[in-house]
Image (cartoon, rainbow, N blue to C red):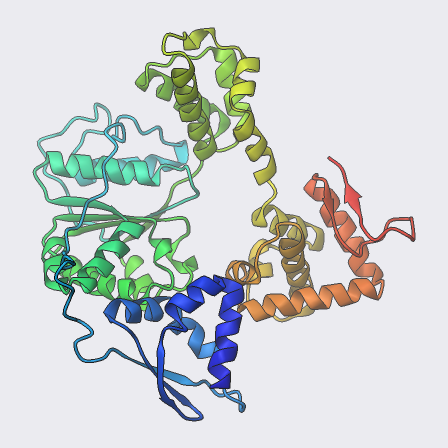
Amino acid sequence: MQAWEEFLKKQEDLLGKQTVNQWLRSLKILHFDATNLYLEAADAFHMLWFEEHMRPLIKTHLLNNNSRTIKVHLHVPDGGMNKKKDKTQQPAVFSPIADRLDPIATLANFVPAKANEVVMRLCCELTGVDPISLCFTSAPPNLAACNPIFLWGKAGTGKTHLLMALTHLFCQRGLKALFVRAETFTEHVISAIRSSEMQKFREIYRHLDALLIDDVHLFMRKDATQEELFHLFNTLHLSNKQIILSSNTPPSQLEEIEPRLISRFEWGIVLQLSELTEIERKKLLTHCCKVRNFPLTEKVCFFLVQTFSNNHSLLRAFEALLLRIYLKDKNFKPDKLQSGQVETILSDLIQFEQQKTLNKDTILSAVASYFDITSTEIIGKSQIHRHTFPRQISIYLCRTILKLSFTQIGKIFSRDHSTAVTAVKQIKTKLENRDKELQEALKQIVASLDKEVAIPGVLTNDRNSDHYFIKS
């Protein structure tokens, strides 16, 4: 079938030939007509992979000559769920392994930003802990008063730490609480399906007092996992069991998550975890030094806080510094460290920190500032020229500067990857035609990024040049 073969070739560009051969070309074509394609999968796991990774693309990318969607019917042969195994092969067994809780991830070790005080008060009330002493009070945990609790924020704002801390406290209260990362939850679902033990999976997850899931944005495009989470959510919510979720975005901005799940994520309370200020990050680093018994001088602490601009990179640098010094000399005195030594020891992380500051957010912000609009308007649905032109430029810069794939760009702008391809082509055409408005816009925007970058087709005063360089 020509349409199917063309679809597979497109996927090779996105997924790689090996993946396509293993998961897609291995599907057996039973028969087809103009609007239907009947395929046979090797087993249930093969079918699950297709449903999670390919089904969403089929609706928009597998089309016949009349541009109508070809419906794919996937079939597992009789016995595909329970094929006879070789005598030497052990049967699949569902034995879920819980994510390990970091013993340091406690409420006492959480250094909140001033803007996060509401979150801290809620955590204390939820677990029956005094907000001053952080010791248990006589009041019982106040479960399900807000259900679910949805925490969101950038990497390093403490989402994982808080979820682990709450799990510690729930367990100390004698409650059945489970902390699980999104990837682990998905692995449990797949493992249960493969071993035909979904009943066991449900017995484990549906008899909890509190379920805490980290990074739910990673459930995007995982249809089978979302389906199971939907029913699990309903069961726990109806039983007044506490559900706490974390993500890098608020529910309304989650991508490729079923609307019925997003609406449930918003049923309770949605709270943002803000990044720490420079003074608060200094306090966090000082606290880490105390907890790890790794004292650093004020000068070194100041250097680290100034060099690493957010909580996530600062903590990663601190842990790397501790480990590298320990591996080099266990008897080294950390309070003897000089800033120059730290700069040498963490040179790779410092270089990475300097490079990563140029990202999609900085590009969107620079474009929005130049055109006097907001980043939200750029990635929004408006089709007026005042918004579409900056959108095309933003897409072009993400492609040429950040080297993002069209699929990645499509996700950033909540559009199909073909839209990103079209936008880049349109900007290239205008540059080839020496569009003065576009050239001036790109010059000003790139200059505001304060980085050394090259934009093909943007001319300087030298007519022989085909690049425009901005040096920081």
